Structure formats: structure tokens, C-alpha cells
Length: 458
Image (cartoon, rainbow, N blue to C red; front, side, top):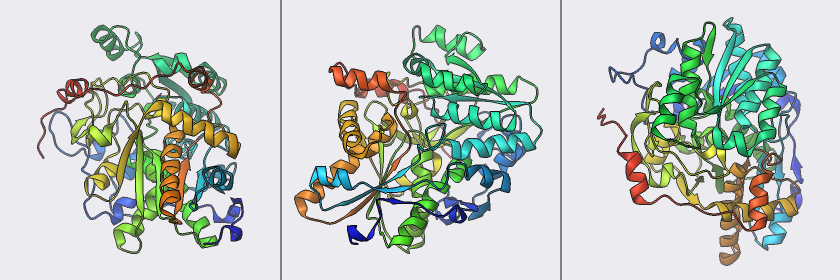
């Protein structure tokens, strides 16, 4: 591939926005294990999931066989507000690194919510509206998902209650205010407003919270409020399905200009961004049509893939949600208060967990200070201040490009730039002031979380 033949930014035409989502499960030889009922330990049925989730989203969650699911016209029209998103050739980063590698990033921050989360938020709000619901509840870590859902609910005139992880609620007040501007109520989690929140506060005094805590509170409120359902911004099969628009557009852009990626990199917290980016490429890999090196990047402070266990575990700290088979640190694991709030989840998508377990992708854990070093390097030459979550992918993309510099290999690297970091300036301030620290849990720390994983052998 000649760099000269590729424009700096590759934009697809509006007509090239995907009209269907791609369901990678249809091509997986080993399907992800089903969600199970914590009482019976049997796979959850449609009727059992109805009190928590919207009907159509349950159907998508349970569908392991349909490769393409049509995107409703109303959602396609909304996507046109900000899609297609650009695939950008990072020529200035390449020059800075002096690498023969070709680096591209799929930029998902060019919408009001500031991240890729809007791709699924608008779909979930649409299905809630068409079901005739009054509102939805959710959790959010750094706030990107909560912001996206607040925007989507505003569009469809739905009420929206957000439980925001307490450390992010305090670190990122402006993202909180964007949610409120769109009409959402935002509560720091764990709160004293729910039974589960009070219990968690009693058991973990002074806790900064976690996504597992916030999920528990949101589910409790959804199941006890008439006309409400719970929606989730990551982890679930349905979310990775909606996010496949990222990968489908990326693949179309690559085919348009003859780009063949060797390495595909994404940050991984629950799995929505990574799963969406890699899905059509992974489909080719599963069908034996092509091969790619796929790398999931997670924080060293919350290393679900690299140090977790592949087991059935609760999806939430309060144990009110179904159980999923995934790489997990234990539902009671409370990660350190690092600044990549969207990656502070104890588990990982069942789809990605199965793919990783089957050796179809790899994972790396990186420390916070090295992530922000990469973020600033990227910002100074590429003109975008990246979100801390996205910067995990940037870190490993830079590492891989430097390997190419040493070996002289001309590899093509594609990474997901999930969003912008303009509401994350407290983190950048700490990095610039030299007060940012790295925390890596000890084996003893992890053992406490592992001890809470139920003994389920299915």
C-alpha cells in the first residue's frame, strides 16, 4: 500500500452507512455461553428477561444465528447526523515515530455525545420508545455512555435516570452537566437512594464505586418503577451488535482504498468499542477468509483479560443481574480510581471472552502514566485530545509502530479512537503536574475478588 494513494481522511458517502448490523456470533464456531438465571443456573428465557430489558433488545441478545440484522429507518436517519465517521491516516504520528508502519484510526468522537456510545444508545432508546415505555435507567463510568443515552432519550422524549460511578461523578462534573442538559437525572453511585446502594456503602465505607455497583442500582430502580426498563452501554451481545457499524464502515473504507490491516487495536473495558471495531474482520478470520492480529488493551489496574478468570459471574456487584460467562475479576472487585472510568468494569463481554479464550485475539494491560504519555504524544501531532479510554489503544499502536521501526516491517495498524478527552482535564492536569500514579493490583488484591466468583460448572 502506498501512503501517497490514501487521503488523510477517508469519508464514506452517506449512502454507504451500513443498513444492517453484523452479528459476529453467527460465524463463531463456539458460541458465547448464554446468560443464566442465578437461582436455577439455567439459560435465561425471553420471558424471564422481560422485567429488565426491552423486548426487541432481548431478541437481539438471544440471537446467535442471524448474521445481519436490519437497522430500522429511524435509527439509520439518526446515524446520518454524525455518520459515517472518518478513518484517519495518522501521517503526523508516523512521522514523529519515524516508523515504516501505516497507522489509521477510526474516529468516533465527532458527535455531540463525544464517543462511539451513541451508536447503541439511539438504538436502545428507539426500541424503548416503540415498546411504549416511559423511561430507562442505566449506569455510566466516565460518562460517555450516560451522555449518549441522555441525548438519545431526549430525541425520543423518554425519561432517563443515570447512576454514575462516584469517582467519575466527582472527577468529571462537566460530563455530568451535559447529561443534565439533555434532561437526565444523574446520581453518584453507590448512593443512599437504593437498597443495594445502602448495602454497598455499609460494606465498603468511603468507596469510590464501580460500574458493577452502578449497574445494580440502575437495575433495582428499573425493575421497581412502572414503565421503565434497564439499558446497558457495553458487555451485552446486543450492544456489540449495534456497535458493529464502526467495523463495517472501517472495512468499507479499507476496501475503497485497498488497505489491508495487519493489526487491529481497541481499548477494552466491557467490550463495546473493541467488539464493534473488530466484528467484520473477526468474521473473516472465523470464516477462514483472512487473518488479522487483534489486540485488546485494558488498564493494568483492572486487568480482566490478562489476569482474570474465565467463569460464570454476576454482571453486577449487588447480584441482581443475570450471570454471564466471561473473563472476570470477581463481581465484588472494586478497581482503583484511575481516570479511564469507562474501563473500570470487573468483567468482559461474553463474545470477546470466548474469542479470547479460543485464541482468536490477544490482550495487553498498560499502566496509566504510559497511557497519558501516548495521549499527549498523539494530541500534539494529530490535533485531537483523546479520551483516556481511547488512549490505551494509542499506547499499544505506538508500541507496535516502534517495533516496526526496529524490524523495518511495513505493517498497517488500525486502532479505535472511541472519543475525545475534553472533559477529562483533571486527569491531564495530574499527568502534566507529575502527580499521576500507577496502581497495579497485587495477587492478594485479586484473590479477594476471585473469592466472590460463584462456583458454577456448566
